[in-house]
Image 1: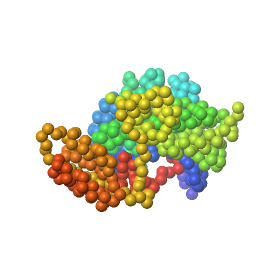
Image 2: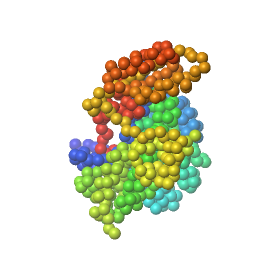
Image 3: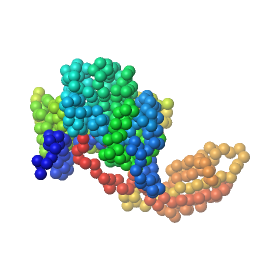
Image 4: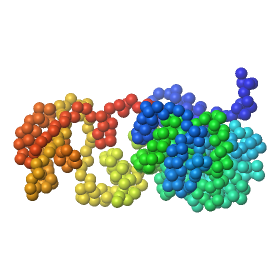
Length: 388
Length: 165
Ligand SMILES: Cc1ncc(COP(=O)(O)O)c(C=O)c1O
């Protein structure tokens, strides 16, 4: 039946993670560092409020943009934590995960013939969603020698006049890199100069371990150029609830809401209720989790450096991205052989774009016992291969 | 106020107090030297009082019961609560003593071999004291969670997928 499929879909590559997932899932006794979601469960106050609302019979559609109480609370959170003012009535849209927000933004902005600048490596969905809108993808390399921070020179190289949108994604999946205000300023100037719109996926913004996160929309003149995309999956350990949001200029949010209205209608009400409870509880549900991630992060970076891999210090998200080139293996070979020999699952850097070559992504959303055991096995594997 | 560094150290220490200063250093980013000094200081200042494992006695074939005992005190001229509480501290059976708000004044946590032993202790040692007006004893039947640790149900936790983006 393949000949019935749209050429757009026929050309859509399956995510590089899929293949590895099938392989790892078929084996027994595997310790995985391959997961992109928290090992905590959702803070109980949030889950409990959703259960209560269901018992009360809150099982309906909400308005397309999402519960107005949630948008109001989100507006307060954006002001308090991110220093940004968004009108809950027309500048905030509640979506089914940050995933939907990314998709909607690209559909609202891109047409065939446009080009989009996507950092490489980065989260798998950007290139896929861009391809569905028929836009050309221009990868902008993130380089290890710059701790995977985006450099304006690299942007310049990748830029062509049909580029309309730039994706930013910091704290970054898979590298764990962050960008400070100073790092972002030249990018903002470049965006103004070239009239680029920015999709800034800041879903890990609450998970940073040094200094305060700078939202891109906070930079001079960037607010109206930026669609700020985020969600509850990571900081509130809510991946399965499917709840996220987008904030931006009313014209763009309105266009996105129109698409959302026909394709999704609204985000699930119970997830919206739980998210609302989380925002009302302030930072306390997140605090313990962040402390615990920080501890594991340090443990993992130390472990990789000690076994002789070079590993820059990631200051956000929950990933470590060690350089494995001293083993003489390519990312995929490393991940496959490690899985077969030591039964540890990591994700090859290339699953996040060609720029991930030479690295693997290891998540520290695991207990310290699991991390220590995995590091022990990886060390045994690496030391057989390191060329001195 | 605790500094950011010290709360990091206390967090890791309270997860696992067996870690050496070197291991603590890896997980906190503080130097082993600073850590040793800080812990020593906390010990001297009685901020850290004891390092003890959390034991699930239900899994051992050990006879052991815990009871919560609420005490209502007769108001006594010239004797503050602190002074009266002192009288309970020395009994080894009494594991904790709290001053509480509400209908009762003190709450004690008592451990014994069995209910009989605890009942005996209450009637022989506590009730006769002239400062006590009333007592209420509640035995703990089952422990679901203590000190932030769940005693039941952990093994039933649903699994995440092996690899996700
Ligand atoms: C950078 C980034 N953006 C978005 C998502 C998707 O988040 P959500 O669960 O809100 O759709 C992920 C999940 O892994 C991510 O890493």
